Each structure stands twice: as structure tokens, then as C-alpha cells.
Image (cartoon, rainbow, N blue to C red):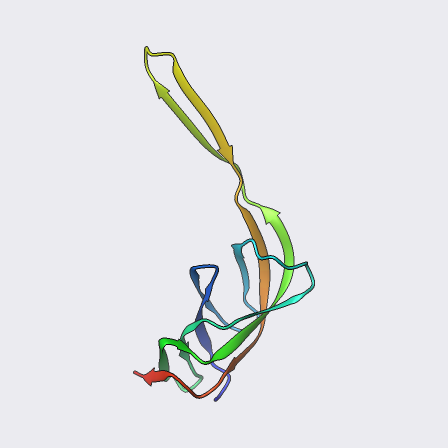
Amino acid sequence: MHIPMRVIVEIAANQFPVEIGTTLRVPRLPADPGSMVEFHRILMAEDPAGTVHVGTPYIAGTVQAEILEHGKSDKVIVFKKKRRKGYKRFKGHRQLYTRIRITDIQLRSGSTAEI
């Protein structure tokens, strides 16, 4: 199949629209920076001619990405208080993330439906 212009891929239970060269911030992946990862859950694809292919539930193919870095998001503060009761709770949380760059998209003819 042709290299698609755009695809929607599922990464760590989240859906991301990607193209070749796109840089994404996704939930932490268990791989080292500089390594390559593959994602097999392609939900939808649009080829350069404008034809949209929808997976049932997924399209057969892979999206390859390079891991650029790992990091932590900004701190989210959770503060709870009940007035006149002496109740205060203070918590902070920093979500871990991985920054990736999409390097290649390959689709195989298979379980797709055209729109």
C-alpha cells in the first residue's frame, strides 16, 4: 500500500494523529533514548490521494518511531480543605512522559474499509 499522508495510531491507550516527521509527547514507554519502537495499532489512515481507510478494528501495518528523551511534566497540585474543620491535604504529581519522532509508516493490505 502507499505511504499514507496521515494515520491515527493508538499508543499507550491514547490516540494520536501522526505523519512522518511528527514529534509527540506520549506516556512513558519502557525503552531507552535513541532506540526504535514500533506501534501496530493503526486505527485510520489517509493516503496521498485522499482516500480514507478505516480499520476493523485495526489496519495491518506498523508505525516506527525513535525515542528522543524521557521527562516529567509540570507539577500538578491537589489541595483539599474543609473550612473550620482543621482538614487540609496537599499532594503533588508529575506525570512521566516520553518524546518520540515518527520515522516511518508502513501499511499492509488487510482489514480496512474505504470511505
